[in-house]
Image (cartoon, rainbow, N blue to C red; front, top):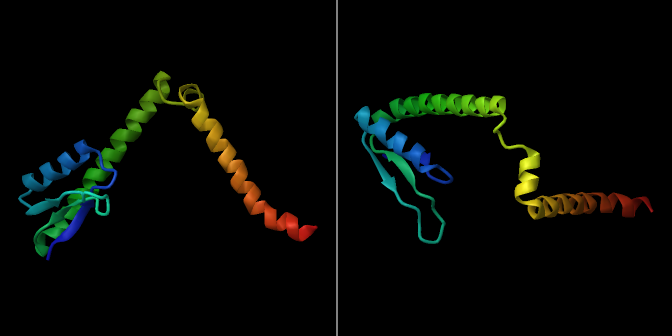
Length: 121
């Protein structure tokens, strides 16, 4: 019975391509389901045979570890170079979004505090 290896929700295309490539390179049978038209299902990469599941999951874990290490190294390098995105950059790019987000946070905190304030009176 087929098992889901990777849900394609929010997965960058290069990552999905890498997963397809390492499954093919290790002779693991797989197939892909496409996202549904209305966004109910996001699609996925499935392993066809039960005997390949453990190997595919181990390969996936190794791949994700390498990808995480690469992303962390790139972020650390960007911080050293001074090119990493900061809060000030976000405020400069989209000040309205930042202000609306802060207002939403204050509003939600007010909703949480309202029952306490009303009961205290």
